[in-house]
Image (tube, rainbow, N blue to C red; front, side, top):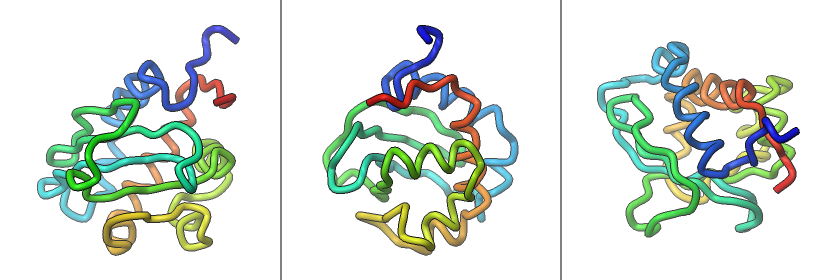
Length: 137
């Protein structure tokens, strides 16, 4: 299992960033990709588990790093359990449905961002399933 990358490790984030940028369905899923320039954080519920920070520029994921930045610099903070992230990555449930079911939670930012960009969110999370992942974090 040494070929698997630890979920949300820097190596995993690097591989996931490449996969997300290579997936044209993510870009197509944005309401307005040219205006999607934001910094966001993904992590576990109630601060549990690893945290990552993503920087988007015009619909391109330009940086995905392990760890976080000052909350004032974040547009969105999106949290879910490890099981929720696994479910979305495996395609067992779409990200939008997990959000509406309360399994993915917005700790900061407008919920409208997920609704307007549902296609991007769903394909973004599905892309995680392309990464050989060690989910034991």
